[in-house]
Picture 1 (cartoon, rainbow, N blue to C red):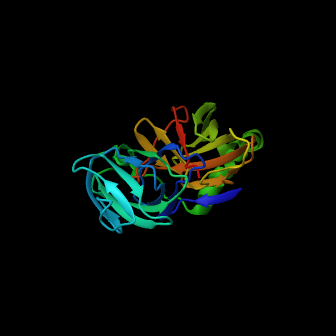
Picture 2: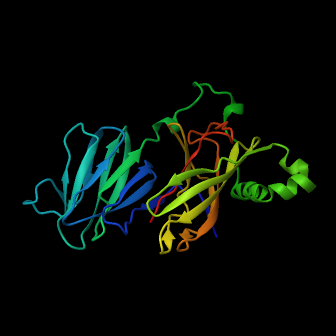
Picture 3: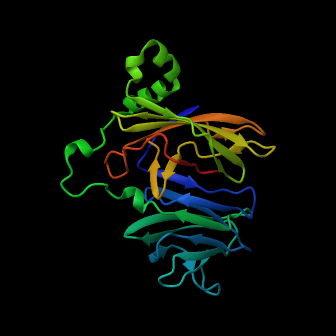
Length: 278
């Protein structure tokens, strides 16, 4: 297993064994999104907000004009279409949405993704209190070793509850057994542990392969969605691999909200587990 702390600079890789793959991802302006694009197929990227501006290198809107990738986008629209114009091509472009910049790295691929639908994180970043928030509404600031300690307490909850109940006195749990389906695997949310004083939740997830080949996913890309709100991982313990026709366990932790406020989430919420396939 790989212990992965959240980073302010992430890379999100999109790779497809199936050239007809359609995928859903959440917006993250701290990630570089690597997108495989085909020479003879069109990739459509759809955003939750109208595109304010588009800046890129080696892009053209006309196949007759020199460029490595052709892009089609109309002013005010929330989607764009991409096609590679040269074998082995690579280029980057930046999209401005809702006053934030999202960075893409394009690569020509024989296995392109044909559609990417981005989920909004705007609601996740909205504060739940007004200006002048009292300090007690801010989430506690935890050091990496404290986050690791919370995850260890979740793993050993049964033993601690029996022999050292004071260590888990503020913990509430739920066992949703809910499924999220991906093209190559499924995730089943087995248990959710809430640590009230830390305003943190630990998640135990089972990943099960749907194919006869090893399946890979980005081990540090975990997040949960509750309604329209998105909560990215603060820490994950995951291998990034699922054996052929097999299953593995992964753990991850969220703490506070993206805006620095307490999330105050019950473990009985209807969580949707999100992770990026490779």
